[in-house]
Length: 289
Image: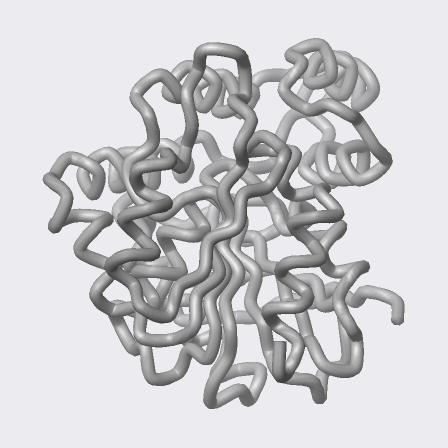
């Protein structure tokens, strides 16, 4: 089944979305990470059953082809509210969530707002506070925003040279080309707003500034639905630590009774194109899985 793209006009602004699967199948909303776009779920979308899963990935506001909204309109809580309005517009009283990185935090924030509407949740490589050493590679990812590149291929070549995405595949070409637009004066630039990403990053810093029972960890108490937690077992670079620590993985499954954790042989980025991860998610989302 060919994926389809469409826009949704929400109270907060216009969101762009991409659907894999039948519009009549149970809804699964896929939420990208901090500076990511909806194409980060393309690999997964092509590996889910189109008759039993309607996977709708979204560009969060300020990213990709969605609206850039005013300062003060971002943060996990506001993005979570958008998810419920998306479900309303798609006529889904209940739905499931797949969140990668910051998208996992947004998914947990949605559960804190109304867990009764969320049937299942997949958290991909985040449930708590990342290792401090991961700040550098995350900062390098954000640094691409606002810069002008001579061409789309020059941009792709620069991303490849960083070395965090191994092995490279056509999915990464599609992901990075999707977010480009012509730059004034020539060349190309990333569509995603650096200001929007920075505001969400600051929200995350605040949510991660508390102890083991507050902030992002306080969201765990709202997770009453079945939860699949996937943890990437490779560092982004050697010595940079993990977004999801072993300690948090173990604490999560101890404290969230409905949760199951699976380790994936990938890093924080390449988990998005891992057959092992896609298979685990597809099985979890399939009725009876």
